[in-house]
Image (cartoon, rainbow, N blue to C red; front, top):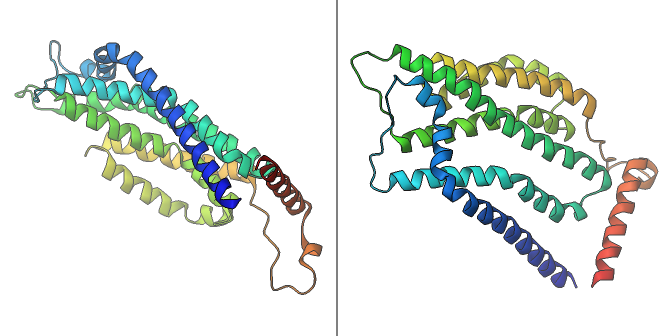
Length: 274
């Protein structure tokens, strides 16, 4: 019976992955005719910073086709991300306790929103600031004409960097919730985190002070937001020590008993299906 259960889980996982891939494929097919326009939209911050009449260049033979398609794939991924996360949630939810469901779902939603907010912050604010700064200090004797593929790689790197940076509060909350560290320990390492933030910013951003500050400062501020949010989430209740004398049931909290009851109910439902 356990083998049948394992196979049924694999079948369900396959079905949910196929649904997510089909949704991604459908959205991508819809976006393909608009791929060039999507790239133009992505390139808007750079084009605004370039001198009047300047254009980007394409050095590859098929680059003018492949780069817009990659942009369409990126947009399709972002648009279908909520549905993909819903499929992942539907797969793992039956195996979670009720208190875990109450915690995981808000974290998934919050992490998705924070990632999208990080991308939006990078596109609308960081790009405009950095591109204008770079083009203002560029020598007047050169003609700036960025390659579209290099520009796309730069944009994807920056989107990923800022998207992950805005996940800092989620990481802080999870570390304290899982009991790995305490709030007091995180407050004590605040100076070290500031140094780490500036080191990360220096590695993943262009070698200019403006972009490094625009990544490091939000990371430090979001660290403080995570500390504030962790005060309300609290840490996970610790399990009783197995070395204690006497019956362990006497030391179980009401929350532990509720978890066991929830697990028994799930196992009973699983047996009834098979």
